[in-house]
Length: 115
Image (cartoon, rainbow, N blue to C red):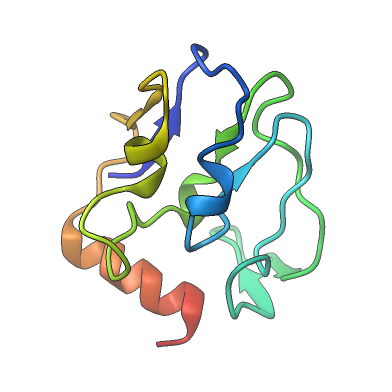
């Protein structure tokens, strides 16, 4: 499963630099598929092709957020999700709406980084 940041986030920013996929962004900040990955373009589920540098709408305007499609729970990089390891208020938690197996997370890592 992916990790999510709850509304208990204090916006300290400790999690953001720890993410190997650049899946964590400050509230209100637009994100890109290519940031922190090797993706040049992405084909979305509806068939739309998006440039890796095209700015995407922030998931949250209030606090730090994780782009689920870029989160691998640090599989292939670390033993545990680094955002959760450094969060001082324990608001980086499993996202019950996005369950993925370890194999799926490793495949996502390979996709994001061209491995």
